[in-house]
Image (tube, rainbow, N blue to C red):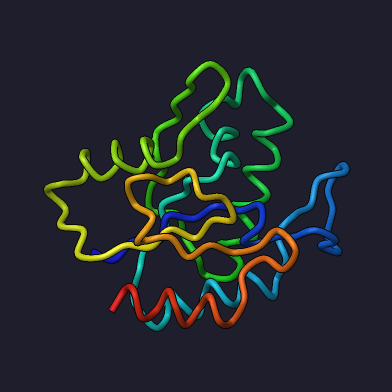
Length: 155
């Protein structure tokens, strides 16, 4: 299985993104289409590693985050993008380290042969997986150059 560990902020939205919900940048359809092109070309599956996944896990405590998560999931599904799984939520005194969460997810999926993976994220807190990072920019979000890098890394 090929996997894309997907962040949302700085990947599917960006600074100045035209779509906002309650003052929060929502996902941009053009960036979603770029993600879909990676999936179509590689057959990769999505594992949501973004803090947007908190809405799934914390729906009773965080109704706002839950509603945003549900809208995100619906928008992705409108583009035929389906979330296969989610990285676990860790909290180290208010700071999560995405690399640890990805490690835990990979450990749990050992029996499901992950043949290759990329991490689409605008941050770099993903050690020890920096060689799998396609680092996007908060100023632009996902670009066609990022798509080509991800496709090459997943093949």
